[in-house]
Amino acid sequence: MKKTVVLGATNNPSRFAYRAVHKLQQQGHEVVPVGIRKGEVGGKSIINDRSIEIKDVDTVTLYVGPQNQPDWYDYILSLKPKRIIFNPGTENPELERKAAQQNIETLHHCTLVMLASNSY
Image (cartoon, rainbow, N blue to C red; front, side, top):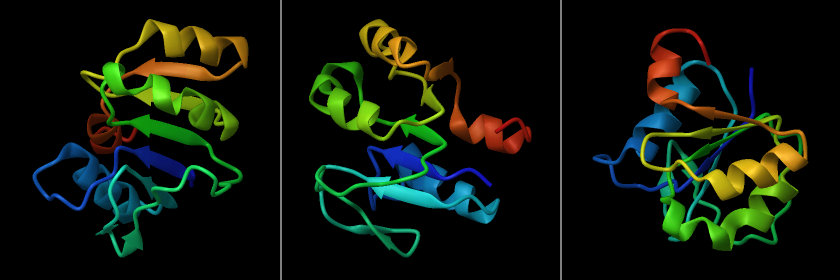
C-alpha cells in the first residue's frame, strides 16, 4: 500500500480532502493528513507543523490551490515523494517543473476517481 500525504487535509466532511483521507484508509493506504488548521480526520490528527519529518512517502495528493502552494513547495519536495497528484483545481506548472527536476512524477487526476477505478 502507498503511504500518502493528503495536503490540505480538513475535518470538514463536505470537502474532497476529507473524503480522500477516508477512501485511502478504506483501501488500506497509510494516510498522513497535513493542513493549516488543527483537527482530526480519519482518526488521525492533522499535522500543521512543517518541521515534522515524514519518511517513506509514496504520494502527495494536493487539495491546496495553486495560489497557496508556493508556501508549501519546500515542504512538499522535502518529503521526496515518488509522485504528486494534482487534483482538479490544484494544477501548477511551476511546482510540476520543480518536481520534475527532482525526478518526482506528477499526475493531473482525481485521487477519488483513481481509487474508485483501482488505478491508484
